[in-house]
Structures are given as structure tokens and as C-alpha cells.
Length: 277
Length: 107
Image (tube, rainbow over all chains, first blue to last red; front, side, top):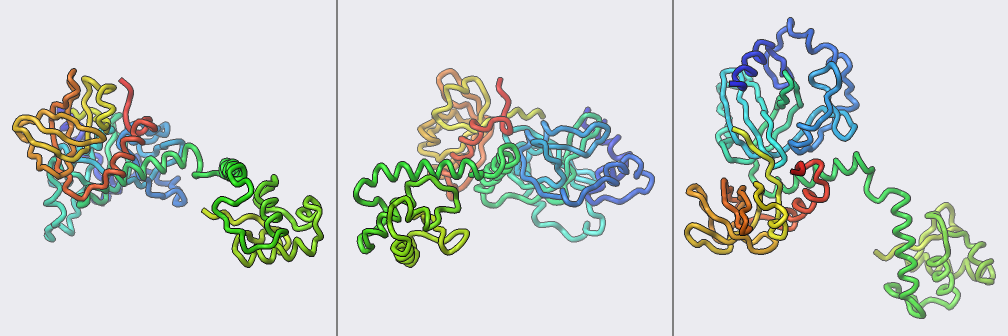
């Protein structure tokens, strides 16, 4: 009953879910104007989400379609779910989708121009089937729903796993930053280098230095163990620390560069180890 | 009409999800009339309902309640075919429990 009530009042707002492609009724503009006017196209990204994220999304005060998830504004969304219920009306079809994290109503407006062309994908949208939807989150009378542009059946069930992993990945990106951020990346590399150094001893784990001169081997070892930034070390520093002539270090560096074991960074005289992995 | 959260789990999680409704994706190992065994990170005994149509060797997603014997009483099942990447599916289960904020609420 609740559902019917909701549906009627929603319909009286005409194209309240205007993004769904229904007709545009000029009089309805009032309720939509403020979010519409502030619309920022730079933030029109397509976000993969779980339904729980939609239900938990923060509603911007005084608005009914401006939400944030993980502190980031959302606009276009995509998600995958199983159809639990289908309700077909003349103007729209409403699906209740369940992805295991929650369920939400997804409303697709009927495009009156396309009524005659039978939609072959729609026949596959039956109860129990998995589908992917694209649309925007709306809130009306404290009830959330999605106005969908596209709903299509999932053909390869791996898409369900794929979507949930993608949603997790984007969630982590927004809450924790990009993977392997500069500081953690350098730390991990340093730890890795130290580990290799210990294991290396006299021989070199993973690096074949057999054909190089003694100086080249020392330069390489020094580059691996000396504390440095990601710019590596200048050949003068290496020469000074090893007590070797700069010209010898330069020659050794040329050999190592030619062998692909090191690479030049800020200039030709500054080198860093080219990690084997 | 109401559709509760159904966290995705594998066999090792059964104990922690007793008396809860869960979602398990596994491969059908054996059919025994009213019951079946599916492999989802370990064997899981499922108690079928009338509408379950499982096929041995196929992946199946079951929604059901974990009982005190750690059997799963099936409420709904969906055939996932024979082309399922279980590494990806198991990664989803791991993500579900590691980053539960976007997947399920504690009870």
C-alpha cells in the first residue's frame, strides 16, 4: 500500500525523475531548479556502487537528489542486482533490485517514441535475473529510488563479482587514496631492497652481474643499499663513497646502463636501480 | 516483499553466520534428493527447497539460512553456469568482510 501511495504522489510530480527520459513538464521546474542550477558537469562521473552505499548515501540538506558517498558527490551511478519484483505501469517500469547488500527501487520511464520497437533485452528482465542499471539516485518522502536510463540483463555472471570488486576499489580509492601512494610505495621498495641485500651476500639474487667489472659490481651494490630518494644517486656521490675515481664510476655506470640494470633519472650522471620485477 | 541483506560467505564463515541469511556461490558437487553438497571454499551442505534446480558441475548462488548444524536451508537459488571465475568470486567474499561498511551491517 505504501508503494502505491508513493507511486501516485510521485507521478503527480510529473517528471520528478526527469533524468529517466519521461516528458518534461515546465510547471515542475520549481522543485528541481536549485539542484539543476548548481549542476557541476565536472563531477558527472559514473560511479560503481553497492545498494547499501545508495541507502547510506548522505543527502544534501534541503535537496532531494544531491547525495554524497564517501564524501564525494555522486551523479551517474551503476550497479548490479537481482530483480526481486517488477511493476509495470503505462509510464514506467519499476524494478526492485537486490544485490545482497540491500534493495532499492529502480524506475525506468517509458520512452513513448520507442514504444513500438520491441526491446529484446527487456524480455530477459524477469524476477530472479541479474541485471545492471545506470541511473541517478533520488529521494522522495524519505524513500530512495533510482531513476534509471538503462537497465540490461547480465549475460556473464562474472560481471556480478566484477562489479562488486570495482565498487570496492572505487570506495577504497575515495577513502584511502590511490593504491601505493608515494610514501608507502617508497617504503615498500626500501624494505624490499634491504631484504634483497641481506639475502644477496656475495652473489646477487635475481641480478646477473657475472659479465661486469669489479667496479661495476661495487657501483651496483652501492646503488642498491645506499639510502636515496627515487632520483637515485649522482656518480660523484658514488665515487666519493666507494673511494673510486669518477671516470671509473662513469665507465661502470655506462656498462650497467647498457645492461639495463640501472637507469638515468634527473640527468645522465644520476642513476637508480631498475627493479627486476 | 522485504529483502534482507544477504552477506556473501564461504564455508569457513558458516559458524560466524549461524541463524543468519547468507548468499553462497559455489560449485555443485553432489545432489542427494532433498539435499546437496556445494563446494564454496570447502563443502557446504544445503537443504533444497521445491524450486531449487541444481546441476552437478554448475556454479550456483544460493540464498539461505544457516542452521545450528551449519547446513544452509535454501530460500532461493540461481544457476551461474559453468564459466565462473571462483578466484574473483572468492575475492568478493574477502572484500565483503574486510570492507563491510559497503556490504553489510553487523547484527
